[in-house]
Image (cartoon, rainbow, N blue to C red):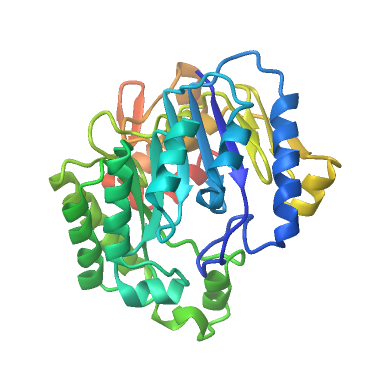
Length: 358
């Protein structure tokens, strides 16, 4: 069944590592944005009932409960099988969490990134490990048990010891889902740009190298498995039955509809994308900026992200025979009949694997 993604691009501050279409925006735009978002959802031809809803951003946890209910009221199917809201630790109260429950939220994804004070300070985040612990207790107190914790491997000042300190907090808090992202270095984040320029700001000179980041990631795979959190996708680990239903739609090429700034949609054959400019979006001019037909090769560089791998049709195996053989020889890909999946080495070099199918 299809899913729904809703983008809320407003943040209290822009984190140094963030390369999303979000940030600190004028307050006067927020009301106009909510109006435009409500109208876009209302215009959608609901020919199906969504199974999942995911509110990302940005920091959608900044939304007052009344505004959250207003936006979700336009999405059919409540109560959804899964409804996720991304949240920044440091602002979750019992009243807010209860409002999420009333609005239909069943799952909260916490952008923790690290439990180590120095690493958090260099990212611009304001929370502490103790705040995260307290707010998880609040969520559980109102009946929200499906909780995800995001961690980033490769933050400035991070070491193997500090990485294990964050993993120790995962053991203490026992979330049913953890996401581990390796730091992306590009010009779209302040930290990434500073690294590329070899500058000193944001702790750029103290960012671990690629080999260290790979070591952190492999350590996380081992430690999280020991806590009952199995890797089911390159960056995602869950206890059985707690995998993100919504995100699995992306990797299995199932349909989803996106609303708001920089939101993407897919109907099974065609992809389209909304503008990433808030002012353009609220003006109502040209919300959709790009449409394209999905490529057959997407099945590989999306499906191979999953630990279960991807089933290849005979025509696929013939078309990509040379690439598949080369990747197998380099110990990046393994094959069992028509099933292809990444090796542990292939996971670390997944971009190189995906490039072979583009």
